[in-house]
Length: 286
Image 1 (cartoon, rainbow, N blue to C red):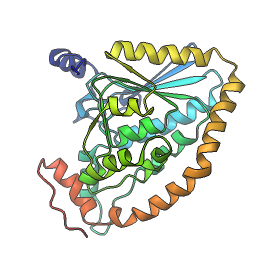
Image 2: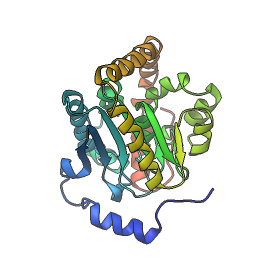
Image 3: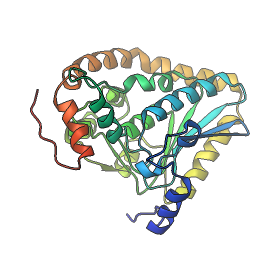
Image 4: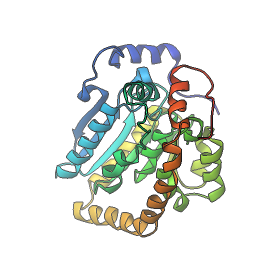
């Protein structure tokens, strides 16, 4: 399968024209873009210089936008995507995580990011993930918590936390979305997998050959949802979530507790540090 992302020159141009410079303070409205047209909200992760990785400012902006779209009666559906840099979302910004850790007291422990996505799981507005590139770690988490998913054929998905000394308790709802063996390959091996594998098991609704066609598909789905009776759509979304929560809420709680040892370990510090220093991690298992 060929790579249908834009070529390197086009990507570099997009990065230069859209990125917030890494050495300047980030402006919330620029690192996560928002627009609303004909009842369709579009939320775009816009940190191409960091492969759309999520900074602490990104988390705050996303949570504010999730609250905003749920409280705005003019919003009937939302599309979540990334700036066109070849990556939908690279996960948590590990370089920033390491910088924050260096400023903390030695006894401070790493914290999971699951809580940042509570609003995403619980909002009543239908969400469409437009996966326009690779989606490891928190990128996969974002896609999981959307209702529909469309993707470009060249994309990959991954849960890479085992190679960062972190964890993925947030992934438990996947056990009701795809086979156990596939999930455990994701969480134990931690390597990227072709998007076709996820389409084959029904996790992805539509695959498209190019980013442009993928966005057209996402917009077409959003237009159909926006044209439907709002209260009926809301009831359908909330009913689906209620059914899922009957089985997933306890699983999420248990998994979060089981991951505490990993998050409180020295390896949870070593993972982001090794990533920032561009070297293999040295795991201690403690």
